[in-house]
Amino acid sequence: MSVRNIIQIGNATLRKKSKPVVNFDEDLGALLDDMRKTMVEKGGVGIAGVQVGVLRRVIVVEVEEGEYLELVNPEIIKTKGVVKDTEGCLSVPDFYCDVKRPKYVSVKAFDRKGNAFTFEAKDYLARCVCHEIDHLNGVLFVDYTDEGKKYRSKFEVDV
Ligand code: CO
Image (cartoon, rainbow, N blue to C red):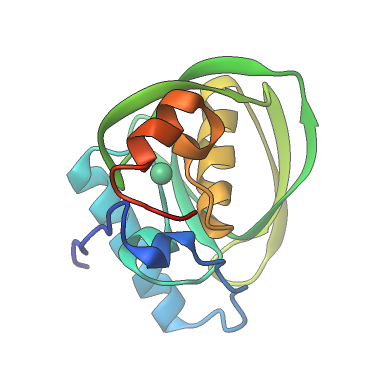
């Protein structure tokens, strides 16, 4: 298992759409292990494949202290409510702002072996899952607010 480099805002890869995982093989397991290790090492609570430069639809989130969940090809199937709270991102240094997110989400995904499951999250975990799924679509939390867009303009000219 190794800690990988996290790409930062301004790197065009972060704006690309990730492709679905097709092969649930050893490489996928190794990627997920590395993502978890990298996230823990960098002090994050969620990470997406694109952040380590792999354009595949995989995310890892911290469900509670020291407990992690891997979501492969995640899809939001239901949301409820809206909550505004502060977000940051391992790919967006030194910037935090309030973002509106669903209070509750239900997500369909696969585990690393290819077994389908559904997962429900609320409050901060729901926020985290939405933030990471956004990464898979090339979206960053700075896209949602004026102050975020102002920050973004220091790194990206044309989004
Ligand atoms: Co992020």
